[in-house]
Image (cartoon, rainbow, N blue to C red; front, side, top):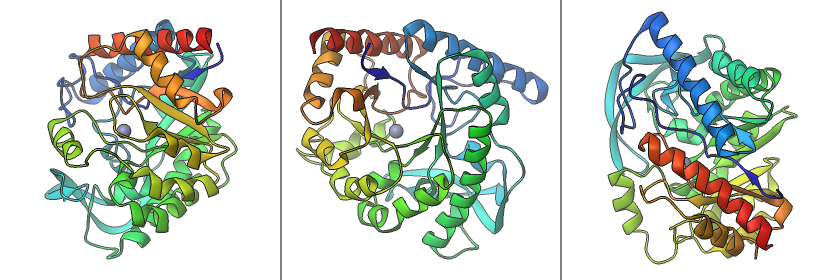
Length: 339
Ligand code: ZN
């Protein structure tokens, strides 16, 4: 098949690992029992992705409670004991966030266990996700650096350290998740992309950035309703990304109001086209997926197109996520047969 297929990153956690249908779920166990459960859930999703026929396989983010806080838990200089409530993504929703209280340093590896597990249990291409610097800055309360740009570059250094280690673990694609780029567009173009470049410095594996309109949770759905008829947020950031050394860039297509001609701003890049809506339990038909791919092909060469989910699937029902993975691959095969 011509089209590559992948997921954005997260997959639902089984009910025996954590609370279901939640963005910040509580774990069901602790200590060695929790570690074993995370490992089992990761293996389960590697198998599910392979069985669905995906070309690129991830760990489904089974080992982290949340896509940002999973990284922060291994960072020295962060106070997790005294979380504070903060409006995040320009006050779209409130979250309990940890505080930056001292100079930042990694306590060691963050994702070694799950990255090596992933590499050992699939022969397919592997992708591993990390939060991007700007999105991390938007998900912590800063009591130390006093400057968003300085703080972002401090995080970028730590991300770079972990990304290099992931590459050494045998990971093929390191992806940084930057939903904040669609909220602070001017800042993203001004320094967000530069911080991202710092995070990917020296990597020889492929690198990607995932930018989206968020998980399919209520506050995000309400926010999308305020964005109007055409969503042009990507327009401000894509030119800076095109000039960057990032190889792959994502955008939401299925059920979004993103004008697809914005893909033209990413000339030369691989484009991860979101063909699966993560805000709806309705499973796409292969025909719908193929049609979305067909629309995107007006603006990107077929060898540059990667069929992908709009965003992570963490808060979804497991059976729905499994069905959507199958629809993604079946739709890509159908588009391949048509083109
Ligand atoms: Zn996303």
